[in-house]
Length: 500
Image (cartoon, rainbow, N blue to C red; front, side, top):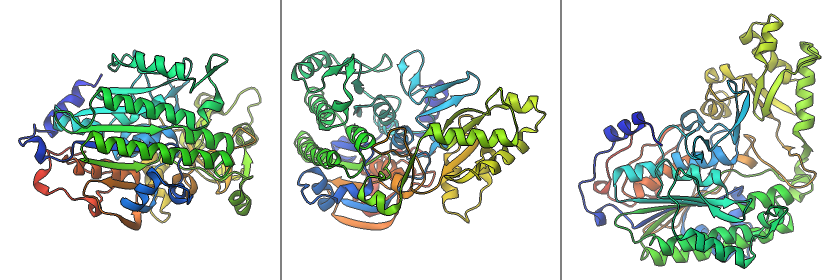
């Protein structure tokens, strides 16, 4: 599962703790992620009276938090939260990337021979640091999406569970332990009719609504009860990602009535969850709350109309990019773009060789050509991104997002207020602009005072800060920071450090 070299590094960096359980921190650490939750959602609705209200009124709220990577997608966003690192370190450059050797797309949590697992991960994770610092610590990860559960849970979770959409039940892979109580839970879930099957899978309508998150919440509740979460021999870490808001946004948009209903449901679900976890831990818990990405307003939304948001699709944009390259270097029988998922554009190196083109010079010229395409804000040869200066503050985001063996040959970015989405309704995300990158960031729990902080912050701050709140030292990196504003644990209570 984890390589020998990684084990050796952890052994060198983490010494066994030499102090008792009560000295090291709370019974329970919690990370809660709401998929596709914009920063403004936290306090948008005066009807909120559950978890959102408690977090906003009782927690340490960082009002200007934004992700420091691109693309702003589910896989990189969850990896940022779980590692406190950017793609240059954790390696999750997108939901999928093109493997040049295989000539095929690679899913972020594809992991042979297990099917699904953390094999594409690199670098440290919060969950691994907690377990390395104390062998008695336990880690549980749950989501509606496999990629969220896997990327939050690190390499050694005690459980990682997600929905099998084809069967309408929660599952895991052979990489992980399968709990003996899961089948009984799934039997009751199916009897409830909460996630009905249509055409051999859970219906899109069920995923794009509160029922999906309610099913996830029921699983978390059962896990807490069955595994005695918060009552283990040492600190437990529970990581939960609610997925339905992402499906609602993609299907209906950021301001549709369905989104209003969805956020009210999540507020209620989260309120119940916080109360349950307080009871399970005897009130001894620390919670970090955030999102993997935001979303742009749809052209049909009131704010989208004000901003002049317009809609395009990859079919349209990709054809325009290909046409621009063909106009400059004609190759009517072939394609220049082998694969594309913004901002990663993978080009046909063999075709360039057949035309006698110098590859680096070709890439730089191709970037110039694509900058002329309508809707493109900037384009770079990816090999040049590490040398970008800080004259533009977004350049630091680009530098941290490049991992050369997985990134596209070109980095191409949409202009602001252009929605790239294959549907005629709803919204999407992925850009470097604030509407996609800005997300809520809240720390809440025992000893954390209510406060608001308006300075720069990032979900990268979660791993080092929550680790310190749990008595584990985990160094920040890749633009993240330790949020000293919320720390209450005495320095003597820290466990041995993870430095990376």
